[in-house]
Structure formats: C-alpha cells, structure tokens
Image 1 (cartoon, rainbow, N blue to C red):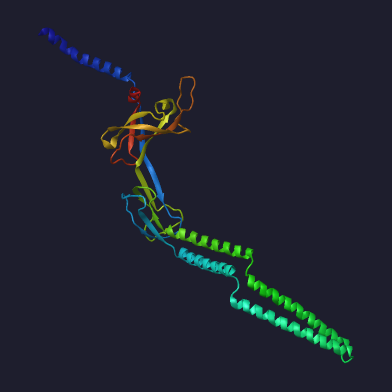
Image 2 (cartoon, rainbow, N blue to C red; image 1 turned 60 degrees about the vertical axis):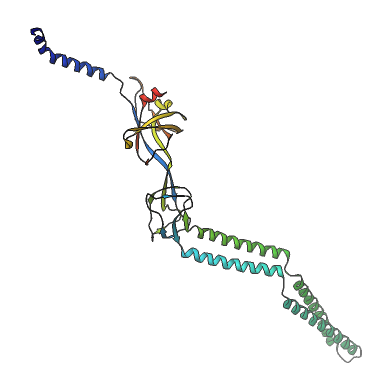
Length: 332
C-alpha cells in the first residue's frame, strides 16, 4: 500500500508526458487533404425570337415541364400588321402571275382586232383616194401638191395598218416567257415573305424544347420582352455533375474515366460515387507555392467535371461536396 501511495505524486507527471507524446505523434501525422467542389446542372434559357409584350407566363418556379409544354405567350400588334402586309403582297403578286400566264382577255384581243381592221379600212381608202387624185393630176385638174399629200396619207395609213396588226398579234400571243418567269418568281418571293412572318407569329407562343425544372422567371405578364431575352430558365437536374478545381500536381488522380467518392454534407455526410467525364484543357493560376527552399513556380488548377454514377434524389445546384485525397489514393 505504501508502495502504491508513493506512485500517486507521479501520476500527473505521467499524464503530462503521455499528452506531450500524443501531441508530437499527432503533429507528425500527415494532414488529410480535402478538395471542395459544388454541384452544377445543365440550364436552358427560354426566349422568343419576337419582341413584344408578355401576354401570359404559364409556369411557376419549381414546376417540372416536359418537352412541348407551353411556357409563355407574347402579343405583338406590329407583327400582326406585317402579316397583313405580307399577305396582301402575296395576293397582288399571285394576281400578276396569273395575268401573265393567262395572257390578254378576249375583250382585249377583240379590241385589238377591231383596231387592225379599222387600220386596214383606212389604208384601203387612202389608196383609192390617191389613185383618184393621181388621175386628176394627170388630167391637169389638181396640182402636184395635192397628189403628194394623197400619196403621203396612203403610205402613213399602211404603217398604221402594220402597227395595228402587230398589236393584235401581241394580244393573241400573251406575255413573253421572260415576263411569265419574272411574275412567277415574284409570286414565290411574296409567298416566302408570308411564310417568314408566319414563322415569327408562331414563335409568339413559346414552348419548352427541353425538359427540366423552372428555376427562374425573369419577366412577368404585361412586361416588355426584348428579342432573344430569356424569360424563363429551366434546370435539368438529370444532367447534373460535380465540379472540382484540382491543382496540377494532383491531376493524375482525376483522369477521364476514373471513379471516386465524394461526400455531400446536404445528405448528412453521405458519400456518393462519381466518374470523371471532363478535364479542362486550359488551367487557371492558383496561389503561388514554392516546391523547394531554393526554387518555386506557380501551380495551375484545372477544372474537373464528374457525373454521379447513380441517381441522387433531391440533388440541387450549388450543393457542396468534398473529396478526401488520401481515401482516393487507397481506392486506386
């Protein structure tokens, strides 16, 4: 008993010595290295090619939408007016094309024929008149001046007859082939203008081209929406990945196709398995770090993307994740 009592004063010294030894042991243990990253996902901006006033926004934040589901609609009186103008232009061009194809109307042809017959009758009368005046001139009754005037009128009437005949023939033949082709192409151009405006008009009702969750609504009903401005943002959590910034001296552990475990604090420190899908081809500068006591250089970091190997329910963009490099070495 006396021997045991003699050790009691030494117990505090032994405890202090044990604590110092444990502290030294802890100090020389390798410090675990963690890489912190975050969850990201594919986002899609839903916008319109047409500027106008938002009529209705048919979705709400957090709503899941499918491909083809109507997102919002726009009203544009200016576009409606342009459509009316384009349709009127198409109707006019089609009418001109039909006129060129069909040629002159029967009434126009008949009128041209009557003008030709009138010119023939006038030419015959002028010829007869000239012959009479010529006989009178030979008999010395009229002067040479009168004879020359009669002759000139006869020649002029022949030219009028030929001109009327050509106009009659043109009416029968209709428009030239070049005119018909030009009218046809103008009609096609007008139809294309109508189709273009109709395409813009169809884009006043914008539907989803990708499935996802509505993460942002940037404009509300009644507000002006500029052309191409995103009105709604969709986030597809089925296309999510983990982004890490890895220093180049540790990049060999994160090659494309390699797998590793990452812990997500949002799920109670639960770990999930990821597979590297992409390593950036260009690096960014990291904090300067000397590699020895004499020399040093800047190390770069490279962005690494990794896809989850299983579905993670309730995963959200921006969730933190960390990877323990020591465990990663053990896995390899």
